[in-house]
Length: 189
Image (cartoon, rainbow, N blue to C red; front, top):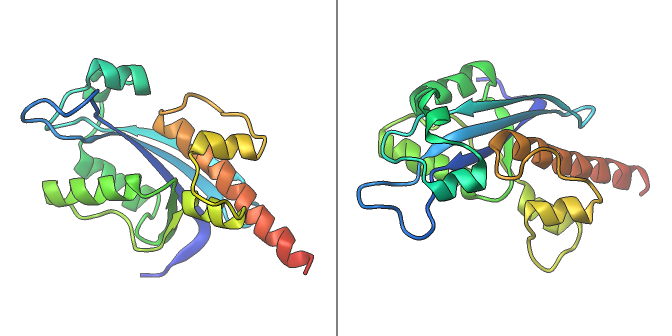
């Protein structure tokens, strides 16, 4: 399988959540996969999409709707996680491209849910943790959240925080700044 470096696949997932522990018999499941394709040459976002995923082992709580704006009715119109993983592989070449997320949550959520459901993990091992990279590039004493990273860069939040598609685009904008910073740093040495 050839590796592609023309674009970076930026992913942000939203999952069912509760204020406190999940109700008996329910577990956190992906309900939205936010996607932003970041062009490796221009460092600009070239495409974004929201894939809604219908949960099978949980329901969307009132707390989850307040956080993400997603309702049970919306995610009921979504596709299965199996179909979503197939789309990632077929349309976004997720097993061939470098992919990124802000922190490890998204990667862990995918790994855990794929294992729990017996689904083939749709990504490869070439993952960029933008949260860690940001802290390292800017010599921060610790990692900071996405909103604080945008503020640090003087970038406004685009869209709605905790909507996967908007967060993926914002993460793409942060990663773009990191790539630009690295390019200009090299040119000045």
